[in-house]
Image (spheres, rainbow, N blue to C red):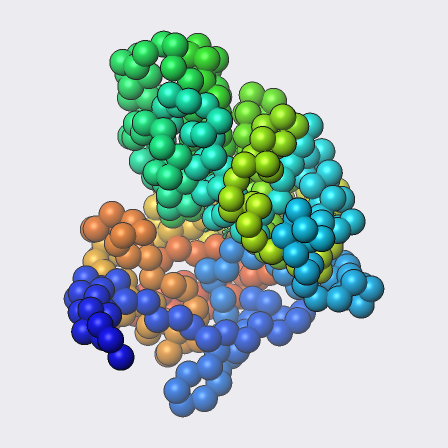
Length: 405
Ligand code: PMP
């Protein structure tokens, strides 16, 4: 093959930097999540999954699955086209109406993933607003960074959640230029939450638009699971809310919700929306059932249970002297602080104890803050947690990692 050496060299440097990724080959079984089987070289074994973003187990919910079966039986598999050319179905339209209503906006637009939603929307905003300056939190997700980069807008990166730094940057810029502040609610690697209200206040003061990624919060926070902005009564102060259907909603796809004119402009201009086959109707049907369920009583029950499970696991880690990071959400990161030991801890938990949690290393997190990121949920029971804590303690000692007194 031509240029093979370039590929091999790239792989060598990725390996040398400890960034080579090995995927665990999982088989999830309906009704048994978080138990799953994993395929290894020497055969299959049962494991417990501790790092899924199917936070509430909706990926195996009976109503979601029934909706998907019905859709596939009545409609078939793919949508057969882009949204413009025969790929808009009843399910797409209903789902967009549901999402707009969930977030209290006059419009919503569906994309094939949350990544595409961020990239396509942000990159298009620069074309709609000449002279745009985008202020971006330094820990924003790669999909936002990519969209902002491609927008052609001027970028200013502010320190994570730092309102004063953001203010200083905005004050330094021409007051007449259009501005947009882009940030997240729940940050997925630390489990902290952005100061949404303070950012909205700044946006009002400087006539800036607000763009909020609620990917790790939709389905999970707020009266109807619309996210942290709903919980904090701030939804109407966010101009563009972005979310995913692939995490708490348990299916796949991404979206934005905003004023109908914003939606109409993005729909007409964003190539990541226009030039791609639309989401499978079966996905849209599953997402619709999932959202409707999580907006109601069952959703509220799951959210309470979920928070309780996350609090219980944090408490168990603390009591065991394990360095659980300061998270205020359902994300429970355990600081290891060394890339090799982080990987070794994860490998030993998997191979010796059947516990699956992916190591999180640089560049996903800064060097020296390598961690394991646990996402306990309603599907995890206390016995699983006790098993987890004792397994971690055993390996923690083996690896010579420090423990709190
Ligand atoms: N935003 C954030 C903050 C994310 O963590 C992710 C994915 N992990 C995305 C956007 C992309 O969402 P999706 O997985 O639906 O592409």
